[in-house]
Amino acid sequence: MEVPPDIPMYAFIKRELKNQIESGELAEGVRVPSEFELARAYGVSRNPTRQALRDLEIEGYIVRTQGRGSFVAPKAQRQKLFTLGSWRTVALACPHVECHYTRSVIQGFIQRAAEQNFHTMVYFLRFSNDTEFEFLADVRNSGIEGMAIWLQHGSERTLQLLQKFGRAAFPFVLIDRYVRGLETDFVVTNNEDAAFQLTRALINRGHRDVGFITSELDITSTEARFAGYRRALTEEDIPFTKDLMGVFASEGETPHSVVTRIMAHRRRPTAFFCVNDGIAGKLLDELSVLGYSVPDEVELAAVDDTRFAEALGIPMIAAVQQGYEMGRESADILLSRVANPKAPYQQRFLKADFDTSIGESRADAPARSASPAPKKGGAAAITEPAQN
Image (cartoon, rainbow, N blue to C red):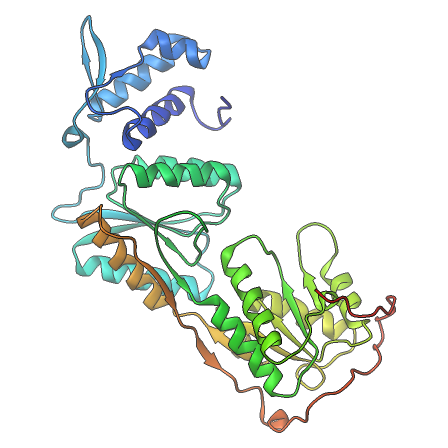
């Protein structure tokens, strides 16, 4: 078993045993492996295993009996590390706080939890696959009564851990994105509808060649937005052209090469749907380098959570997620789960708010036909549309 380099061995063994106790793998009254058995299993001396068992005993997870060994203690004996007077404690884990949308989610969650006398521990951390698992495992064992989780990666280990949370009836709710096949509570935006409405607004303005730009396609929110984009094209009998789709990824093509390739297409886009406003900002920069004016020559639509368009004065069709409502509803669901761990799962999709005003100068834009030839910088090979 691989041990993270930044965690002491005794703390790692302690956490592993806690997880097994919390998940029910080691049920109440069951004998816990001895210092010697743990030392042999982890390939260490008995010092770290002795410390791990001592800490678990102090925190009320195990009972140690001379001559008999260690046994899982009743749940009522376990320490509550974050009890603040009459207030109980839940946690909220978010990737960052720079975004207006994220701040709104946090504000809504904290206020709703406070109304029910719950204190919220808020964590702002950017995770790798491994550190996300380590964090959730540690916070789970900190004495909180439930947790709202904004998954950043959702590795196989993390999903297995969340499944253990569920089996142990530990209350948690997913915010902003969910995981297909994982039965749990969640509150997310109706991302498919948001993308459908934005793409249809572009089509209604006369665009027939609408590009799609994303940074990733491995999370449900992005997958749903791509599905909404495809549905809008289908309902208007517009073929999906794979060559008009681009991914701004950390590896592979640079954003410049992606946009250059798309704008060199025989039917170059006159509009783009961007999965978020950060992507829209990068696209705007690349279009400017290639000599295209926004919105006069290329129009943009995006899920605008950082108020990007408003801040820069860029005319753009925008959908804004209801962050405050998402936070409040997530807190409601989580605290309901705390009160009744066996209640049916609640899974809510919130509608985004739309602003379809692009600018007075384009209010009566005519329908587009075939796209003009590429501009400067668009020297990539011209290809026929690839239909999917």
